[in-house]
Image (cartoon, rainbow, N blue to C red; front, side, top):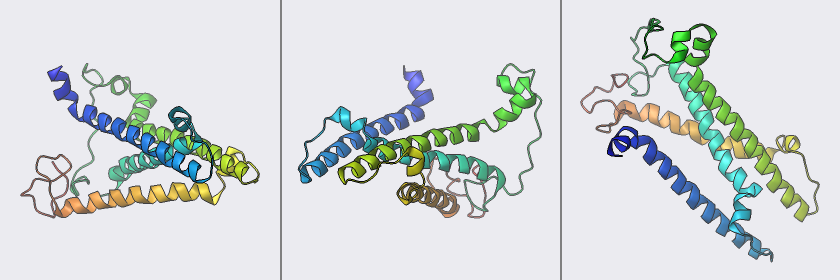
Length: 218
């Protein structure tokens, strides 16, 4: 168990924090939603009803959507672009790595040994995975948002809409863009701040003694 925790501690702790905050979000959101219902003279709903509601699905997945978009974009942009002095950039003088022929090596992933189109897909599999997760979250955001929007429309005597109609509303895109812009602000912050600032022991930081112009962490 100690070895498992040591070798996988980062993933375990991050996932535990995610679950803790997700649970806290659901409880706080449930209480806030019931407060809103009471203010309008309506009966409160149970916790299970809230976490399966459009309100919770929309609020949660619109944030997941922006995170996965950020990661997909970052994987691509850091492969193509440079930033002098940033720990998040490849070195400016770095040569393109030569294709290493390890297809006969038992340590290389199966896709590398297989080659061909399988290798081409594998070479971009990180970005593709993030884009798939973004698409799933984007559609869940639209699904949850449609349910919540239609509930409010019904309460106010307005017409209900389909998911595709909801996705064409300013309401939907306002939710999306307000999350997307914040993610890219975060990316810009870490790219720029790692030029001048340090965190001893972190692989996201240059060595404390490194010059500001030094690019990359290696």
